[in-house]
Image (cartoon, rainbow, N blue to C red; front, side, top):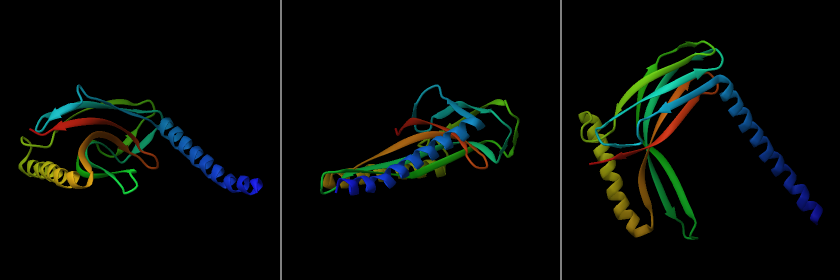
Length: 184
């Protein structure tokens, strides 16, 4: 019987090994293309405040870029406990604002370019449409979290990140940083 157990784990170990090799190859290909770095003066912002910073794009070889952008993304993170007491976590995107830094074009090998950006944190001082949407998002999450969370042991919270992405054929170059956006 011990031989049967050993035979059954071989394919599993092989599959895990193949997945690890694929992940390593993905990061090697990405590293060979270049890198993206985000610089922010701080990580916490109030609604309506300007989120300003810079993004540096470094290419290690010639790249055909479809576009280069920075995005502010809001996620609703939902945690609950099932009947067995196991924690289940789910995330879903509920807000996205993209700001183009560069359009399609070619980047020479060794190119090192810095792009400045400013995005308004969603909330009371942003445009009417954006403000209404972010107010609805914040209100809906707080109301739902208070009602459902109290009854079911579910917690909800809003998480934010700033992502910079060079859209390239094959593997994109990207970087992200977590942010805190406070609603006043």
